[in-house]
Image (cartoon, rainbow, N blue to C red):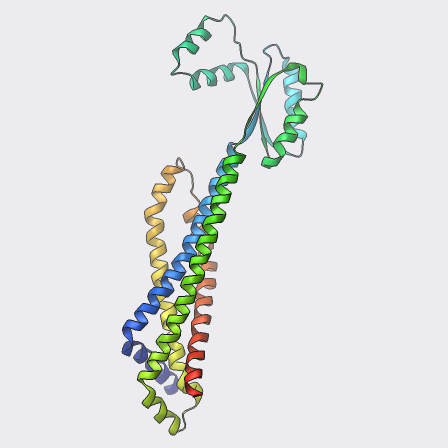
Length: 303
C-alpha cells in the first residue's frame, strides 16, 4: 500500500514539475478527441438528413376522374402486395383538389379558373412510398401494367436521389478530411506525451540515478511516469466530455429549427452511444498514453 501511494504521489509530482508541458499535452489530446467526436456528430447529422430526404421520396400516380372506385381500391391493394412497397395511400379527388388549391392559394388565376369549372377536374391519386429509393423505378413500371394503364393520367416521381447522393458525397469528403485531422492531432498528441515524459525524466535524472543505485526496480521508476501519462489522458477525456456537452447544448436548438422541429440526430447519437464512446475513446487514449510513457522511460533507463 505504501509503495502504491508513493508511485501515485510521484506521478503528480512529475506532472506539477513540468506543468506547462503537461498542459500542452492535455490540450493536444483534447483537440484530438474533440476532432473524433465532431466527426461522429457530423456523420450522425448527415445520416439523419439522408433519412429525412428518403422519407420525402414518393411516386404519385394520378388517375382519370372517371376511374371506378373498385379499380382504385384494386390498384392500391396490388401495390401494397408488392414486397418493395412500404406504404400506399389513396387520395380521393376531393382531397386532391383541396391540396391543389392549398399549394396554389397565392395564384389567383388558377383559383379563379378552378372556381369557374362545374366539376372537379382532378382524379384520385395513389401515393406510393418504397422501402428503398432504388425500388421506385420498379414500382412505376409495375403500376403501369395493361390493367391500370388506360386509367392513369400521369405519374410523378418526387426524386431526391441527386440531393441524397450529393449529401453523401459531401459527408464522405468531410469524414476523410476529419479523419486526417484526427490522425494528425493524435500523432502530435502522442509525440507531445512522449516528449513531456522525457523532459520529466531529464529534470529528475539525478533522482533516477540515485534510485537505481539503491536498487529500485525498473517498474518502480517507470510507473510514476506512466501514471503521469494516464492523468493527462484522463484530464483530456474530462475536458472533451465537457466540450462535447457544451457544443451539443448550443447546436441542438439551432439544428432542431433547421430540421423543422424534427430530431437532428446529434444529441440522440451521443446519448444512445455515450457509454460505448467513453469506453472506446478513453480506453484507447489511456492505453496509448501509458504505452508511450513506458517506451519513453524505457529508452532513457536503458542508456
